[in-house]
Image (tube, rainbow, N blue to C red; front, side):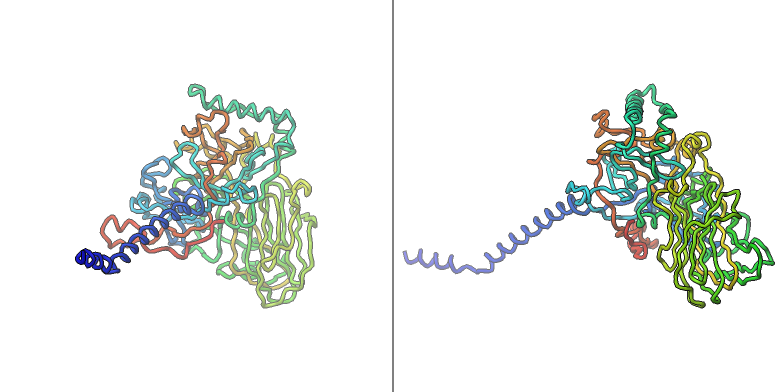
Length: 574
């Protein structure tokens, strides 16, 4: 009995660290499990990381790409690589297409790794996507126009796409002259809605009948007449618009050569002109000439994106432009004016040293007869003090900014100003816009210096019937054309329309011609060219890991991975 007592005492007096150790292991395992659960919950409902595989959103977001510094002007830019899994999208032949055209000076840089398996191995930008705002069901937190969103590929539930949301539910949408136009469904007549519904049903029948898969019939003239009256241009948000300015020519990067095809600011009066444009800083000295201006020549202003090494021909001209520079007046008098043109409309944005700013306009054939339009009086400019000037014509809105602040702008309704695009019936016959006249900068009455002179163009959304279909790219040969002149699209209560920023090389809502089994079984509930609300994953908001720098001396496959982050390209997505 005593021995038993001794044994129990020994049991009670076993080292306490063993019991504590068991508790510590248990706590650690519980903590790890909880951490994993929280991570999965966070990823499923809050924020998730995605990788950009292609350049359909370039240059906003980049897929697998190489980086080139132009040997002629020094501009750094990204160019796309051949995707081995989809060779139809890029040329694999040796020749001019194995060159990257500089977006600034159009110089054909060669010796590229167009087919670079190492770059394709690591893909492109890595982004973060907000998911929880879209899951709450609150309209103000849901998908908004111009958001960059991630969604399920309508043709393949296992693939995620990323595009810019441009069409909202309960509106009819049409791409006109490179811009997006919409009208609320409830503003249309019953006859117009009925025809749009009939066209949607016809599209469904064509999709389900493999032996009769062809383009839709053209819309009737009555529908076009009504749409011409009720469609309004979609103005991009200021944040999105800043992301969608493409540089046409930056005078800070002067080409070394003055060959044909190289941009150059040319003085209209030649040697008699008061302009000197040979250096990065442009100067003007008044010589009392009647019309002393400089004009950007040597480069067509087209919907060109340097990322596309194989999409270069038949690009439409773009006339939505912005000209900006830093102006330094040399004395207390004189004025500078910028001239922009769109189709038959000509605009001048004028800044006087005495502080008066104005926007004038005229017709193309009577450009010498300028009609006053908008004006404002500001404090006089100070000689020797630089000030930022910007003049833009975008989405049928003209605006003049001074000192980084917008001073004058036309009405939000272009029809009220008599400044509106050509009629839809005309575009049916003459869809391709005329060649854009180059921008001009006038000066008179004083001495000026211009620094950081940049010309930019707006994004141009293609009408697939006239541009994309004419190219020899198999991946663009589907029926498509949704939302274009031939095929206005009616977006129902849960349908969205998506477009890629790189319009010339983006298979987006315009071109989708198949539905995957995850959607096709829903029949007419799903429409080609749209994304149902429940297929949208979230809003992209940050590039946390741009395609990094590789260490070539590492053994394969480690030398294929960009270990060193390109911190300078980490950015918010706009």
